[in-house]
Image (cartoon, rainbow, N blue to C red):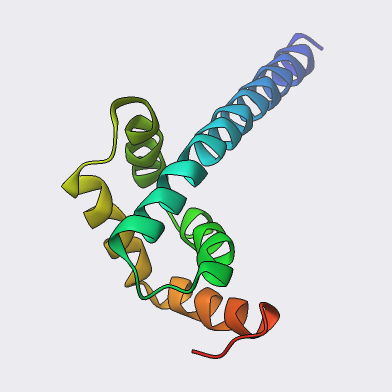
Length: 111
């Protein structure tokens, strides 16, 4: 009986941690979007304006937790060369490229 209560309490506590982590991730993603949009607009002039938002979404969706933290930090302290390098790294992943190729036709363009 005590064991069951302890397991239930542990699971309840862990579910709270998951919700907190999800809120932190969502906040980091939102903060990062403006940074990625700025980087695409200023450092990747070959990206058509119509694709900046879909490309931003692809980059954010394919960033890992450390990369999201770097991008969110740049929203506070400003974009640096390392921030642009982080975006380049994310862009080089096959999953990101697949997302980008799918985003272009949805925007009425071809790559």
